Length: 156
Length: 150
View (tube, chains in turn cyan, yellow):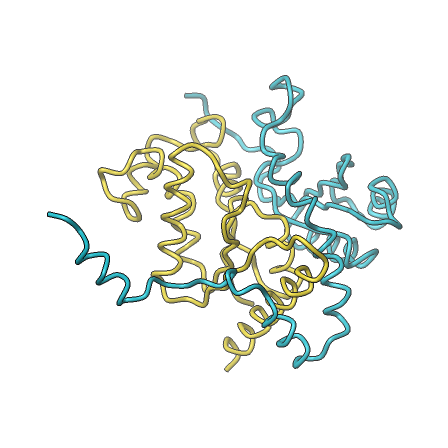
């Protein structure tokens, strides 16, 4: 096995997704470049990938989020941008792993709506809204009586 | 700041919500980044070496397939670090081979067995459910802060 020397050692990479009626990925990239202060930014179809030292990236993504707080979503990424093991330029064909993003991006409009509404609520109203969730969402551990019945019903 | 394990571990929504409400999300990216950023012997594509199934023995029995143990070597340390967890019930996209399916079950088992605060939610399918989803997460995550500071 070859000796492995990581690229961009000591850095973190974050995905920035934008799903906004007021801000496109390109607008966001331009705004991000203006305040990047040396942090590496890669513009993508869904938003940006930001790579740099942890503290620099943290302050940059917080500033980016402020442009449209309810419509910008951020998560960590393990690989730096353009990594040969993950980049489709080297692999050929579509890059695996975007299925989850595609699925969740169909749901973020509800989250944006929720964030906008919850921002104006006080503690009591938040508690009330949280309690209105469908009952089946909550964990229901198996009832002990039911478990006993199941054990007893087991045939030899 | 509390370390919150998110399931599915690749979730954008959960990762964002946890960070937005002031805590640290623990997911796949953290485990993978640790391997990608560590110099040593190259073991593409994820720097996961034949040693991982041995490390995974801490969280999965020896008769469990090595693929599950290898995956648990990535997730196990994160679960041990976790001080709280958020679990999305039956996420449509978190399917995969039996290795992935069994690892998902093991992750949830370890999280529930650990005795840390766990919040169960489901993906919202309407604006109203979105409000409930965000409110539940905010209530849970704000509560963690209060518990931590007490």
